Amino acid sequence: MTLPTGVERHDFDGETSLATQGQPVYGERTDGDWRRWDPHRSKLGAMLEHGMDTGLDGDETVLYLGAAAGTTVSHVADFSGPTYAVEFAPRPVRELLDAAESRRNLFPLLKDARKPERYAHVVEPVDVVVQDVATRGQARVATLNKRFLSDDGRLLAAIKARSEDVTADPDAVFDSVREELSSAYELLETARLDPYHEDHLGIVARPRDD
Image 1 (cartoon, rainbow, N blue to C red):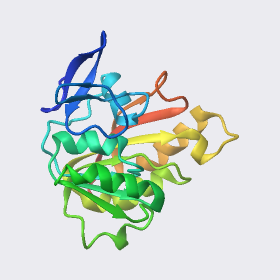
Image 2: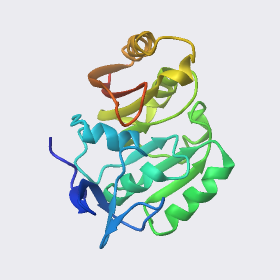
Image 3: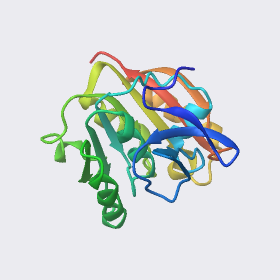
Protein backbone atom coordinates (compact mmCIF):
# COMPACT_ATOMS: atom_id res chain seq x y z
CA MET A 1 0.00 0.00 0.00
CA THR A 2 1.30 3.47 -0.91
CA LEU A 3 0.83 6.05 1.83
CA PRO A 4 -0.25 9.58 0.95
CA THR A 5 2.52 12.14 0.50
CA GLY A 6 3.01 13.64 3.94
CA VAL A 7 2.31 10.38 5.81
CA GLU A 8 5.29 8.26 6.80
CA ARG A 9 6.22 5.52 9.22
CA HIS A 10 8.39 6.60 12.13
CA ASP A 11 9.79 4.97 15.22
CA PHE A 12 8.26 6.14 18.49
CA ASP A 13 9.97 4.66 21.53
CA GLY A 14 10.64 1.42 19.71
CA GLU A 15 7.21 1.20 18.05
CA THR A 16 6.82 1.90 14.34
CA SER A 17 3.68 3.84 13.52
CA LEU A 18 2.13 6.14 10.95
CA ALA A 19 2.99 9.79 11.45
CA THR A 20 2.28 13.24 10.04
CA GLN A 21 4.05 16.57 10.52
CA GLY A 22 2.22 19.13 12.63
CA GLN A 23 1.52 20.46 16.09
CA PRO A 24 0.47 17.75 18.59
CA VAL A 25 -3.26 17.67 19.36
CA TYR A 26 -4.19 14.80 21.70
CA GLY A 27 -1.04 14.01 23.66
CA GLU A 28 0.38 11.76 20.94
CA ARG A 29 4.06 10.87 20.93
CA THR A 30 6.35 12.90 18.70
CA ASP A 31 9.64 12.46 16.86
CA GLY A 32 10.88 15.93 16.02
CA ASP A 33 8.21 17.52 13.83
CA TRP A 34 6.49 14.16 13.31
CA ARG A 35 3.51 13.15 15.44
CA ARG A 36 2.28 9.61 15.88
CA TRP A 37 -1.02 8.82 14.18
CA ASP A 38 -2.55 6.45 16.73
CA PRO A 39 -4.83 3.91 14.98
CA HIS A 40 -6.54 3.16 18.29
CA ARG A 41 -7.71 6.76 18.37
CA SER A 42 -8.47 7.13 14.65
CA LYS A 43 -10.65 5.01 12.34
CA LEU A 44 -8.96 6.42 9.24
CA GLY A 45 -5.60 5.63 10.81
CA ALA A 46 -6.84 2.07 11.36
CA MET A 47 -7.93 1.86 7.70
CA LEU A 48 -4.43 2.83 6.63
CA GLU A 49 -2.86 0.37 9.08
CA HIS A 50 -5.03 -2.38 7.57
CA GLY A 51 -3.63 -1.51 4.16
CA MET A 52 -6.93 -0.34 2.69
CA ASP A 53 -6.54 1.44 -0.64
CA THR A 54 -7.97 4.81 0.36
CA GLY A 55 -6.89 6.51 -2.85
CA LEU A 56 -5.31 9.31 -0.82
CA ASP A 57 -2.28 10.85 -2.48
CA GLY A 58 -1.90 13.99 -0.37
CA ASP A 59 -3.02 17.57 -0.99
CA GLU A 60 -6.67 16.58 -1.62
CA THR A 61 -9.55 18.84 -0.70
CA VAL A 62 -11.42 17.09 2.12
CA LEU A 63 -14.80 17.22 3.81
CA TYR A 64 -14.57 15.51 7.20
CA LEU A 65 -17.86 14.55 8.85
CA GLY A 66 -17.78 13.92 12.59
CA ALA A 67 -14.58 15.77 13.38
CA ALA A 68 -15.12 15.74 17.17
CA ALA A 69 -12.15 17.34 18.97
CA GLY A 70 -9.86 17.02 15.95
CA THR A 71 -7.88 13.84 16.64
CA THR A 72 -8.07 12.43 13.11
CA VAL A 73 -8.92 15.53 11.10
CA SER A 74 -5.78 17.25 12.42
CA HIS A 75 -3.69 14.46 10.85
CA VAL A 76 -5.69 14.75 7.63
CA ALA A 77 -5.09 18.51 7.51
CA ASP A 78 -1.35 17.89 8.03
CA PHE A 79 -1.08 16.32 4.56
CA SER A 80 -4.18 17.57 2.71
CA GLY A 81 -5.31 20.76 1.07
CA PRO A 82 -8.39 22.67 2.31
CA THR A 83 -10.06 20.52 4.98
CA TYR A 84 -13.62 21.25 6.12
CA ALA A 85 -14.34 19.73 9.53
CA VAL A 86 -18.03 19.31 10.43
CA GLU A 87 -18.93 18.66 14.07
CA PHE A 88 -22.35 18.97 15.69
CA ALA A 89 -21.43 19.15 19.41
CA PRO A 90 -20.22 22.54 20.70
CA ARG A 91 -17.89 21.18 23.41
CA PRO A 92 -15.46 19.25 21.16
CA VAL A 93 -15.55 22.09 18.62
CA ARG A 94 -13.70 24.23 21.16
CA GLU A 95 -10.80 21.74 21.03
CA LEU A 96 -11.17 21.49 17.26
CA LEU A 97 -10.64 25.24 17.06
CA ASP A 98 -7.40 24.83 19.02
CA ALA A 99 -6.20 22.20 16.51
CA ALA A 100 -7.03 24.58 13.66
CA GLU A 101 -4.97 27.46 15.07
CA SER A 102 -1.72 25.99 13.69
CA ARG A 103 -3.39 24.63 10.52
CA ARG A 104 -4.51 27.41 8.22
CA ASN A 105 -6.10 24.88 5.86
CA LEU A 106 -8.41 23.42 8.55
CA PHE A 107 -11.87 24.99 8.70
CA PRO A 108 -14.07 23.90 11.64
CA LEU A 109 -17.84 24.05 11.05
CA LEU A 110 -20.31 23.74 13.94
CA LYS A 111 -22.92 21.99 11.82
CA ASP A 112 -24.98 18.79 11.61
CA ALA A 113 -23.69 16.32 8.99
CA ARG A 114 -27.30 15.15 8.52
CA LYS A 115 -28.19 18.60 7.17
CA PRO A 116 -25.59 19.41 4.49
CA GLU A 117 -27.73 22.19 3.06
CA ARG A 118 -26.71 24.24 6.11
CA TYR A 119 -23.05 24.28 5.10
CA ALA A 120 -23.35 23.90 1.32
CA HIS A 121 -22.70 27.63 0.90
CA VAL A 122 -19.31 27.23 2.61
CA VAL A 123 -17.91 23.92 1.34
CA GLU A 124 -16.40 23.76 -2.14
CA PRO A 125 -16.38 20.58 -4.25
CA VAL A 126 -14.05 18.08 -2.59
CA ASP A 127 -11.90 15.13 -3.60
CA VAL A 128 -12.59 13.12 -0.45
CA VAL A 129 -15.37 12.77 2.11
CA VAL A 130 -14.16 11.19 5.35
CA GLN A 131 -17.04 10.11 7.57
CA ASP A 132 -16.95 9.10 11.23
CA VAL A 133 -20.34 9.98 12.69
CA ALA A 134 -21.72 8.06 15.66
CA THR A 135 -25.38 8.33 14.71
CA ARG A 136 -28.15 6.17 13.34
CA GLY A 137 -28.46 6.43 9.57
CA GLN A 138 -24.77 6.53 8.67
CA ALA A 139 -25.44 5.43 5.08
CA ARG A 140 -27.96 8.24 4.70
CA VAL A 141 -25.40 10.78 5.94
CA ALA A 142 -22.94 9.57 3.31
CA THR A 143 -25.60 9.76 0.61
CA LEU A 144 -26.67 13.27 1.58
CA ASN A 145 -23.08 14.50 1.46
CA LYS A 146 -22.33 12.89 -1.91
CA ARG A 147 -23.33 16.26 -3.41
CA PHE A 148 -19.90 17.66 -2.49
CA LEU A 149 -17.80 14.88 -4.08
CA SER A 150 -16.14 15.22 -7.44
CA ASP A 151 -17.06 12.53 -9.99
CA ASP A 152 -13.81 10.64 -9.35
CA GLY A 153 -13.77 11.39 -5.61
CA ARG A 154 -13.71 8.96 -2.71
CA LEU A 155 -15.83 8.26 0.34
CA LEU A 156 -13.80 6.93 3.28
CA ALA A 157 -16.32 5.90 5.93
CA ALA A 158 -16.07 4.20 9.30
CA ILE A 159 -19.42 2.58 10.12
CA LYS A 160 -20.12 2.00 13.81
CA ALA A 161 -22.53 -0.91 14.24
CA ARG A 162 -23.64 0.06 17.73
CA SER A 163 -24.70 3.49 16.55
CA GLU A 164 -27.14 1.90 14.11
CA ASP A 165 -28.61 -0.69 16.47
CA VAL A 166 -27.01 -1.61 19.77
CA THR A 167 -28.88 -4.93 19.90
CA ALA A 168 -28.30 -6.14 16.32
CA ASP A 169 -25.56 -8.41 15.08
CA PRO A 170 -22.81 -6.16 13.64
CA ASP A 171 -22.51 -8.27 10.47
CA ALA A 172 -26.22 -7.77 9.79
CA VAL A 173 -25.83 -4.03 10.36
CA PHE A 174 -22.88 -3.85 7.97
CA ASP A 175 -24.79 -5.80 5.30
CA SER A 176 -27.67 -3.34 5.59
CA VAL A 177 -25.38 -0.31 5.39
CA ARG A 178 -23.54 -1.71 2.37
CA GLU A 179 -26.84 -2.34 0.60
CA GLU A 180 -28.13 1.17 1.30
CA LEU A 181 -24.85 2.81 0.31
CA SER A 182 -24.68 0.91 -2.97
CA SER A 183 -27.52 2.96 -4.42
CA ALA A 184 -25.35 6.09 -4.35
CA TYR A 185 -21.82 4.67 -4.28
CA GLU A 186 -19.76 1.93 -5.85
CA LEU A 187 -18.14 0.09 -2.96
CA LEU A 188 -14.47 -0.50 -3.76
CA GLU A 189 -13.27 -2.07 -0.51
CA THR A 190 -14.60 -2.90 2.94
CA ALA A 191 -12.80 -4.27 6.00
CA ARG A 192 -13.46 -4.70 9.70
CA LEU A 193 -11.30 -2.35 11.79
CA ASP A 194 -10.50 -4.81 14.58
CA PRO A 195 -8.39 -4.91 16.68
CA TYR A 196 -8.20 -1.12 16.70
CA HIS A 197 -11.96 -0.47 16.74
CA GLU A 198 -14.40 -3.22 17.65
CA ASP A 199 -17.59 -3.56 15.59
CA HIS A 200 -16.53 -0.96 13.02
CA LEU A 201 -16.41 -1.38 9.25
CA GLY A 202 -14.12 0.67 7.04
CA ILE A 203 -15.50 1.48 3.59
CA VAL A 204 -13.83 2.93 0.50
CA ALA A 205 -16.31 3.95 -2.20
CA ARG A 206 -16.73 6.28 -5.14
CA PRO A 207 -19.90 8.10 -6.18
CA ARG A 208 -22.20 6.63 -8.80
CA ASP A 209 -23.46 8.87 -11.57
CA ASP A 210 -26.77 10.48 -10.67
